[in-house]
Length: 262
Image 1: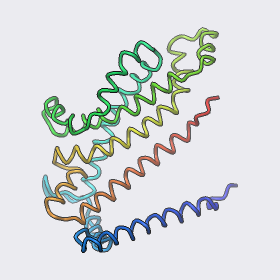
Image 2 (image 1 turned 90 degrees about the horizontal axis):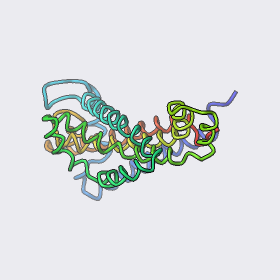
Image 3 (image 1 turned 45 degrees about the vertical axis):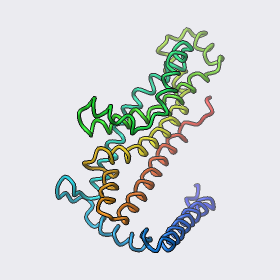
Image 4 (image 1 turned 120 degrees about the horizontal axis):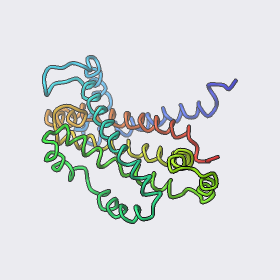
């Protein structure tokens, strides 16, 4: 039976706590250098304990607990990410499997991909007539590109030997897609999804700062208006931690589907 606590696991745990110590010391040094205008870890920890004492309180539109703010953001992220993925994967399969489609759509992708989410927000407001819909829209439109590009690359990389097998056995188009194309491209698709969820979580903060209402991005902006730098620092750490956890989840899924196609 494989041991749970191996030497590598111990090194990983020690490295994690070591990085936390380095972060805390750097943070404290910056606080000292700015004459505590940027709060240090200790006063920030005191405010954090107050926030998590009742994270799901709801006293009105602009006064909600940090738990409600975070859950609202996560819901928007997964909704926008899901919509973007539903567009990106089929289009990526189409572009990767057809040179004509690649030439037709690739210029559009290269033009739209670098556009900032802030530039998309007014169009989202115009289209959906609501800040909630606009926020989901900018998440979808900015997060779909990594999945689209990785999917098309994976399909375009299918070796000729694999394609010839399908022809030799007389595979229908559906059978070719399900038995050859998708299995080969799946690791690339998952890599794209991993990158896309990171982009989606990055965009949510900017989107909620513009849209207001409720969410971790709005919490940051509201804390700035209330001159609570401790809350801003707490939000930054929460955003980073959730982003790390999302990346770890997709990393675990990625390891289930190795790159070596047998």
